[in-house]
Length: 338
Image (cartoon, rainbow, N blue to C red):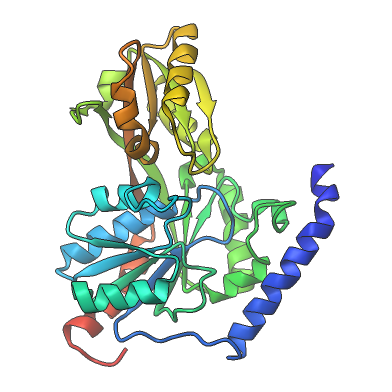
């Protein structure tokens, strides 16, 4: 019923997005080509699609090949603080990779090239950002809700019409293990309908280990005989809970906040109280939440807090993605025109 009520707003939003895309497609709005290759990683919907783990994977792949790369991010809801939320997580997960936070990503690109000598730029959450021309446009699609219920914001989760898939050079279907094979086949057919025969890879999210308040690594086995209370402020909290349960962990309660939630000490006290009421031995969150809560959690001595570190695993067609990336790496190494 709410989606029906919001339908007219979605129509207005969709019209505005369509006009903007038309202006870029026809060249009336300019896309700037940069002197180094640009890899955009984004999504066509709001919410958690596995974009951040894919950005981390990409940076590690490039640095493993000896390429200097930098991440350009707008720093959504950082409230003027660069060391917050996703930028902080990216910086911690990709040592040696410069994370440049600036809503003006063209200026960020120039800084990354001139000051840090970046050879390849990673445009974080860049699918709808058309001001910078990209050499590789990778879309992350969540297998549990790939196309935002088929409706544009705010009635659904689509940032733009599904026709926007045509701009993608490749798609990575995340949380592949959380969907049935017939559902995956349906998703791939939709991608092919709008984007043609582009590479489509499959990935899943794996909880590799935990961290305690002192930064000590904890193996997954440490949590298997414990009652866990989950808290997080991410786009798809249920997917995080699902991953924990897939690992055989016992989740006895949860408290979900809005995506990019700015935690305060009162939140931590509330979480501790709720966890105690459930008989939970550990209150656990995502690594993305941990960068904003670790210091606050240390101030609460009534509850044990921890986080889970998640990594992306390709489960199919990873070679199709790496083949596209290798072409860009070759252009950097050989200093040939792209």
